[in-house]
Amino acid sequence: MGDPAADASAAWRPRLAPRARLRWDEVEKRYMLVFPEAALMLNETAPEILKLCDGEHTIEGIVDSLVQRFAGIERKTIEEDVTSFVARIRARGLLEG
Figure 1: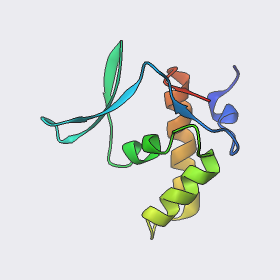
Figure 2 (figure 1 turned 60 degrees about the vertical axis):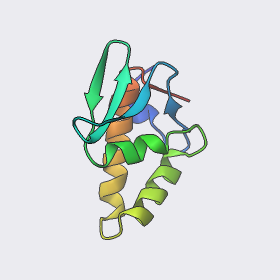
Figure 3 (figure 1 turned 135 degrees about the horizontal axis):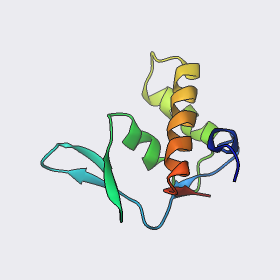
Figure 4 (figure 1 turned 90 degrees about the horizontal axis):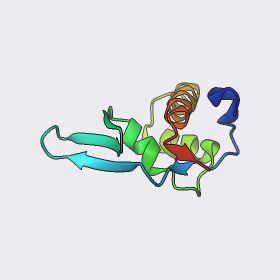
């Protein structure tokens, strides 16, 4: 599969793998990414990225949407964060596309 960061090209349309679910945790009051082996507690922006990983949005489209949503944060910063996060989640086998 190669380097996950390099594979997360701007045209790729990621979606959550069937075994992964984005869930709200009432106790922790934050989102978690749940999958058979474990669960990941997510920071404030990670769920916003994952909600856009629906198989319809490209990486560029995800960045565009987040740039609009988080005005005041530089596009380059958002792009780096999205690319890095998506690559890490994809490397765990939790994203496909």
